[in-house]
Length: 600
Image (cartoon, rainbow, N blue to C red; front, side, top):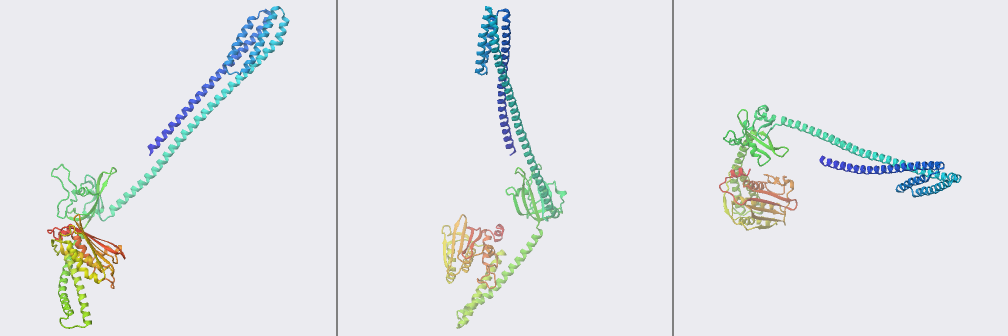
């Protein structure tokens, strides 16, 4: 920016100097012309004065001729001098009429002088004196008057030329002063702008400096007050900063670690106790820092679990987040680590897992124990409903029907709880076999067809046969997923609505979509429906029956196998559940291993 301003200023200055040079050349030429004109007029004036002196001398000699009686040479000499003078005047700037006037007077004087000489030669002195006094002398005076007028004219021209020369000099001085003022003003303006720019830059620098001070104070406050451990290293793995939280967690003070390599103190390890910092056997070789390893492909790492060694030699689990630092040239300059002790959290998590396992085992036991008497109740209910023990009246049949319906609902709840507890306790085996998925989907539609007809709902399907006839999966699990989604769609779709099933195989994935034209799901509730015991209407007098375990069970099964489920819905227009699962499962992988691999 400043370079462009300097270039523009230099160009303007150069143009001003060029213009000034052109004007100076013009002024110099005009001065020379005026001075030449003055010299020319001055020379004419000298010639005029010389002619006047010649004329006076001639008149004196003519007077002397009355004494000597010899005057032709005088007449010729004066005639020659006046002739040359008049010829020089014609070449100059004298007006033509003035030259003609002098020539006429000169001719008269020349003629009269000859007559005077002739009379003198004849001895007629009185006649010669009369002509000399009456004609020659008046004409001579007239000629001198014209000469004086010409002399005044020359003097006036010289004065005018000198005035013009003075005006040129004054104009030159004014122009020079004007350009000097422009250059001076431009210079002052330039330096004034530079001064303003410097002042503005000073203000910006002061603001930036204050901002840096504030940031430094803020960083020091964070390092001093944060419960988490915070430290930074450079590209040579040297610790540059060490927070108070890091001191409290590790036991190492800032004075002990700053300026030292981080691996000499923390020794990062994994859960099995293996060192994460790798060093070659050669003593002169540089090792590979753990923090460099995990930031080599990603600038920011969140929630990485690692074990650090404390000052007392104990290794504790820590959760660490790392961010790369870059210098002004965008080159790596180190990293910042934020870590916290998660020993207590891991201990609490272990307790929670144990309690959850105990809960699951209790629920599984209770569910199993409840199913036996409930199956007996349902069995005897079926016998009574079929009037095996005798004829029943209409009211008794209605009561038995309610008992059987409630029993089936309770049995469905117990089965769902049992399935969930088995999944959570890793007691469910995945029986991976090859089967016809297209046939399974069609059978699922047949199973819910009666329920749909009773509700006045139309079923639709679009199952792409390419690649659907044989997949390797757990048939019971995929059947459970489809039946739950179809049952939910029918349950939440009013009479006259539509429920559809679509499925296809694409790029190693099975994509199953179950859609309906039902009540829809509000956007803020679309995540909650996958939680256990959650329904859209959670009031005691809710319209739709169910425990809210179906979608939770579906999501757990899909998550375990590494798939995904999402919902698209609009209130009053319906919902669409989209399931994407791998088209093949490895039968050798256990349920717990699947959980670990997919982070469930």
